Structure formats: structure tokens, C-alpha cells
Image 1 (cartoon, each protein chain N blue to C red):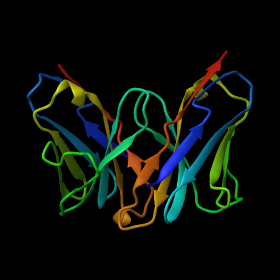
Image 2: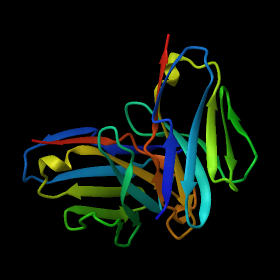
Image 3: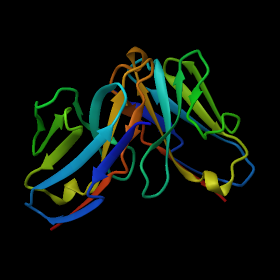
Amino acid sequence: GAVVSQHPSRVICKSGTSVKIECRSLDFQATTMFWYRQFPKQSLMLMATSNEGSKATYEQGVEKDKFLINHASLTLSTLTVTSAHPEDSSFYICSATSRGGRDTQYFGPGTRLTVL
Amino acid sequence: EDKVVQSPLSLVVHEGDTVTLNCSYEVTNFRSLLWYKQEKKAPTFLFMLTSSGIEKKSGRLSSILDKKELFSILNITATQTGDSAIYLCAVEATGANSKLTFGKGITLSVRP
């Protein structure tokens, strides 16, 4: 199957700093990428959907100014958590799909963010 | 609002047992239902179901969808300790961007 990578796999930062997470599709062109957040013992919650070359669509309750998403190319999307706070500590997972989102989503390995 | 409910929330069995995991859903403009297995990291894809009554099989795992009753089951036969994981069910709606709505997951523990 298709391969999606995320970097970094784990990050610890101080409160108030910004953290950038990269999501790459390694062997296919991802026209659409999704960003999810998963708190302990909870399911994946979709944060936003990004299409290459256009602005991301955020789910209700997700602050777009806090979670900046850039999908600059067909193989790379980034999520920047700005001015991170301890409550932003979570597991962030991206997924990527081709054909405008009509194909199966392939998940990255996730990034564990801990904000001190 | 699309909704996915999985049951039971957790399950403990012994190796060799057969388990059935349930997923019911409500979704506007259904496209597909997907099952994922999540161990320590991100989910890995198991099955995608789009049509009722057609069983999908992969080794000891199988799954079927009932679009009339709006549910799916995932069966695992002859369970092994390596099957211990969280099993996630998600539904995909039609639209320009096919969003997935996930259930809370079923935590399966298989004891030796």
C-alpha cells in the first residue's frame, strides 16, 4: 500500500512555542490530506482537510489561527501548532489520499506532542 | 451529524477464541465503511466495505456490511496475542473531500 510519513515522531516543547509537523506521501501524489488529533483513549477526531494549493477546511471548534495548515505540494502538508499550551498535548495523525479524496486514506505514523 | 458507535468498548479473550466486533452508524450520503487496527501508532487499514452482504476476508479476519440496518461486524477467528489492539470503525461520506468519521474504537486484549 501507499506510504505516508510524518516528522517528527515525537516532540516536547515549552508552552508558548510553535511546533511544525510534516506529513509526506512517499510514493503517490496526495491531492488531499487530513489532519486528526487523538487524545488518550479517545478516537481520532478530524481537525482539518487540506487540498493541495488551496486553503484548508477546518472542522467546527478547531481554531484555524492556532493550527496552521499548509499543503504546498502534492507530497507535503504541514501542521503548525502555534503558541502551544499543555492542553494541545496529543497524538497528531495525518492521512493522505489521491484522486481528490475519493481514494482510500493512508495514515502516517503519527506525532506525539507534549507541551510542558 | 455523522455518527459511529462501536461495541463493546473493550473485550478480553483467550488465544484461540473467536470475537465479533460491532459498528453501527448514521451518515448522510454514505460512501463506505472502513475498519482499521491501531496498535501503538497510527491506524492500519483492514477493510473497506461499500456493498451489503458481501463478506471481505483477510486471513483470520472478515467483515461484512448491512446497509439496511446500518451496521458492520468484524470477526476475528482463532485469535492470537498479536491481535491485541484497538479496532476502529469509520464511515466515509460522499463529497468533494471524503471525510472519515471514526467511532471510539474497541480495545481487544487477547491473553495467552
